[in-house]
Amino acid sequence: MQTIKIAETSAKSLLKELASFFETDYTENYGEAYIEFSNEHGDGIISGINFPNGVGIFRFETKLENDTCLDFHGDLVHPFKFIYVIEGRLDHRFRDEDIVHHIEKDQSVIIGANSGSGNKIMFPGGMTVSAVVLDVDRKKFVEQLTFPLEEMDDIYHRIFADTNAMRTLYHHTQYSLKMSYLIQELRDFTTPGLERISYHGAKALELLTYMLMLYRDDSKPEDHQNVLRQKDLEKVKQVIFQIDKNIAELGNISSLAQSVEITETKLQEGFQILFNCTVHEYIQRKRMETAMLLLLKTNKTISEIVYEIGLNSRSHFSKIFKEKYGMTPTAVRNKEKV
Image (tube, rainbow, N blue to C red):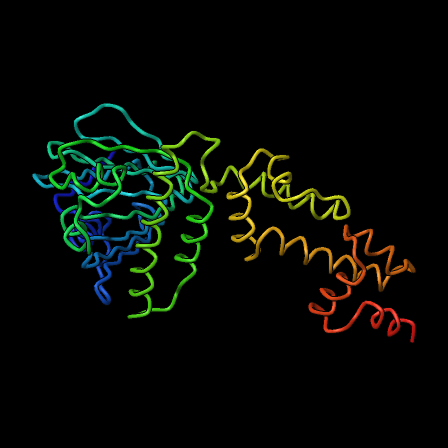
């Protein structure tokens, strides 16, 4: 395995070291460091920027020819690292330990090396790796807080109060569906210049927030966890299938959640992420779409249609139908007959 020694952790220092190793040009724009290469070392696009609040964000899109280790060493307090693997795999080892952690696709970790150690982050050779890394400078982040550190919740205080890196922290989990969408938004944003830097700064804080929420949620028993993970997506899809195929005989939202063994909070978050609406709003939309189809394609009476979409009141149906389509069901039926 080839090793790149990294003595400083800032974006500019790191990217300059990588540019030298991969024999490519180092560029900088609005404070963001950037390298791109396609040569005997492999292919790669790597960027990074540090913000005044102590948060830095790095993006790696690489396919290296050989196993490659970024060896973060030096006599310094290493920042917390929040790593999100989008594609491929990264390996991690603390410099004072022999245990190697494998961070797979759709997984994330929080890493805090103690003051006598450091981090080794390894990229497997021949593998396409896509990852986002947040660096949080412990002291800078604490200094910019607008409240005393002692007021912080205990679960977070144990992390951020360790400004001198007295303890080792390693927390491995599957990142949430919301984080997945945030990362995709980050990758899709291509506007250059000040807008890009502002956007990256905002997304870095948003990702950090959701990572901390996930960290808190992981501390709870599984049946009390409310953050929607990637693994929960299939359960949300099962509920969508139930709604789409059985609109006439749906139970309430609680029974829908129970049927796939997911909490109502997770179910609602899934619908907000996928459809930007609540479960109730999705059901209502599906009922109206089904009703319109039945009005146009069948000879069923309006009363029969009301029953078939799972409603009890014809007047209520007419009201919400008109709100959606701007005309009553009777007007649609009459228009179709003309």
